[in-house]
Image (cartoon, rainbow, N blue to C red; front, top):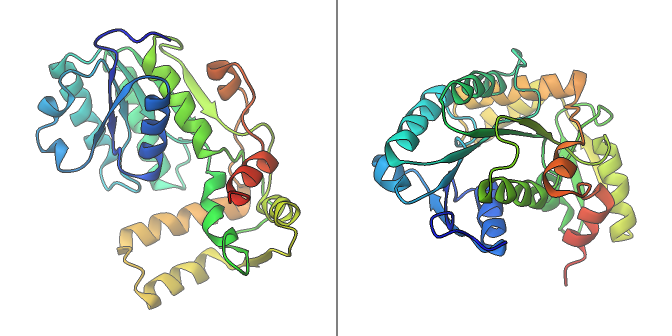
Length: 272
């Protein structure tokens, strides 16, 4: 794709985190110029966004006021002349049992009423979240919820490539797209697939949401009380329901299926 002069600059809010880095890498690969924006840049958001044709709106994880944060960014996008936005929401945003999901549902409403051309993406949890525990000498997965509930796990690279495609053009304006993998899987499936890739046993350790919260508080994890409470609520939800997510988003955006669990683990764990 031959980028237009102004379409080259693509703002990525919260661009220094793992999702932001994946989006930035995909934007660069597609010929765009990613403008990664962190907390310091947003002290003057209008100036930070000027010159960007499109912007990826993403709040920091577990933000205490995501709705206010997104409202601020929408106002800055208007003032800076941004022509197109993509909002990073989450699979199943309207889940009142999970406060940070519910904040994204309310933020989606603000995006829809912003009068800016928008697309909303709702990614599921990332396969990549399990990789650190699988890369050691004794690979393991530890989760504080039932390992047999279903998830539409997706690769971070697919999320980045989908975002870059949307940001570079005008497809799917007004759409809300679930971003899940090609089939529903469980954490136990992840462990089994990793064993097949690595050729060794992968330990699967399961605790409870309550035990996880107690351990975080006892060990001084760096999470504050609100963050612990919100994550405990999320794990309790996962324990009962998982996080099922549809598979149609990636084919709709990229014209191909999302990478499956086996493919992603082989790519990530067999790197020399």
